[in-house]
Image (cartoon, rainbow, N blue to C red; front, side):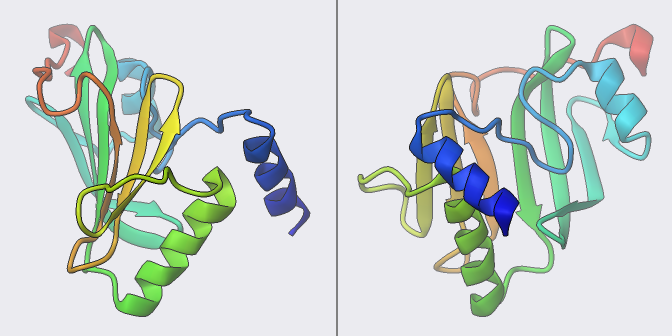
Length: 148
């Protein structure tokens, strides 16, 4: 409870908390990712269908560019129930504060951060979260040959 209060104060004071999914974050080096998650399957991008976020299982997906994570997403599997979705949304609110006050994609909430946006989509049949920046959906993932 004390930690949650400190996180909330940190966010309220404008100190962005780094967005991390199952230990992965934008900029984390490919070799460090492989050491941390040796079970990840990496071909064009990397995926781990056994990852957990907030105690819930799912598929962690990362894109790699210039030897580091440049795209990051997590799909909850199985799809979250309404109660689970509310719990995950509540946890994001505790971690990142109130979401941006704009019309996000239907079923999603967004939190603006330095360099990008945290996106959480857990309503209207959606069960995913990801980091959205200039690389999202447009940057090709390239796995370093020497590290396979």
